[in-house]
View 1 (cartoon, helix red, strand yellow):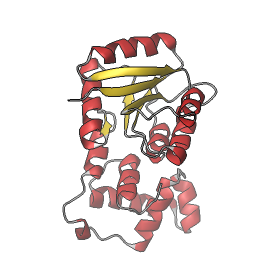
View 2 (tube, one colour; view 1 turned 60 degrees about the vertical axis):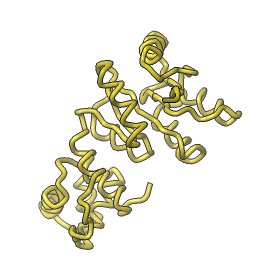
View 3 (cartoon, one colour; view 1 turned 90 degrees about the vertical axis):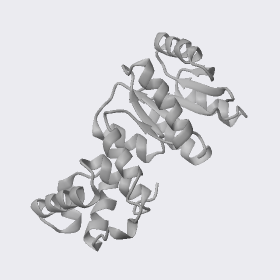
View 4 (cartoon, one colour; view 1 turned 180 degrees about the horizontal axis):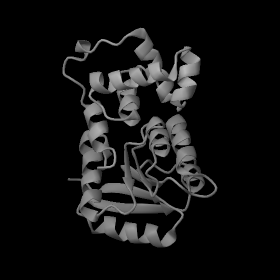
Length: 214
């Protein structure tokens, strides 16, 4: 197995250095660069630095945070494989990072064994999410072998697209000219129909089935 090249982007030097030491202790993984923020990373890539096998990207950083960095990577380096690192576990942050192309999302207090699993899974399968969101996302990323067996109504498709645009359910009700109660009914029906448990699952299903384009 070839050694996998990793870049860390994190503004906390002590954490970044400790993480680099941990990653270098894993067989077949090596940290080649550590950057303090997204601006340093994007400038290096724009100047000719080759994409690594994986980028470990902090979400909250000064100057250029993880979300802004993902937007840049999506536009200029769409082949980049990024695993988000964060202390944030709120739905909106996760949704934004997923929508902008991150391959995984793990919390900074995750244990080394889980981190290694994440690295291997991204390498082998393309995506990884920890227990925080894994059941929902993995279910959505492995849809039924017969996707035609799920038939969505036009109103359900419109609802899914609006869900992906980070609008509140009340805002969606106003746009669709429906009551909040009706919108809540769409949400519950889609949870059952698609086999997901929360909004993140709806977003991933929509993206994977080309209902919403990144």
